[in-house]
Amino acid sequence: MITLYHYLHCPFCVRVRLAFGLLKIPYKSVVLDYDDEKTPIELCGKKMLPLIKNIDGTTLNESLDIIKLLDKDSLLNSNIDISDLIKELGSFVHPLAMPYFIYTPEFNNKSRKYFQDKKEASKGPFKDLYKNRNMYLLGLNKTLNTIEEKLDPFYESDKIQLEDLLIASHLWGMYIVPEFQFSVKMHKYLQVIKEQCDFEYHKESWE
Ligand SMILES: N[C@@H](CCC(=O)N[C@@H](CS)C(=O)NCC(=O)O)C(=O)O
Image (tube, rainbow, N blue to C red):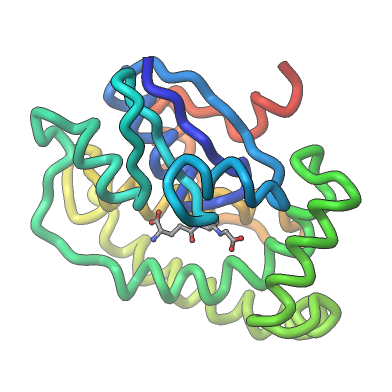
């Protein structure tokens, strides 16, 4: 069985978990502490997840490469490039959700400090992210409106595709932010993806 090393909060990891579920491929889930540098570096030379270890011991990271490997029959194939849209979503979702992520059971005191120090170095103090939350919420809602207009019922498609996994995984963390509410249409879209991908966000925290 393939082993997936991941962080629960990480959208790039969530997209791979969605793909495993949608393609009905069983896997062994290993959630690493965010401050564990040793395990990922030993496995693949850098501290970056998601990462898979195949049965033959070979490893692979980069979420899109992992999904490509899993999707042998190209069921998720599509020709649309939404990388800019995903970056835009990330620029709003990360500052809104990160101050909440660190208080979920995924983190302990040490990994919480490691995460916060690292993210604050690139994104600024969490205090400021929180203070500016209305600005991020405004931007996010605008982007969500443009996505919503393209749901048919999936993103520019009548069947679930890679784009839906990318969008849903980037949005999932917003369920944790109390200042935010998805529109009914967006919520239903995310819940359909959750069902089709047999996805439970925090399952590993409590098993
Ligand atoms: N391009 C990578 C991005 C993965 C990524 O950014 N992972 C983050 C977690 S969200 C990470 O492992 N960061 C480790 C760190 O910064 O310490 C992919 O798609 O797999």
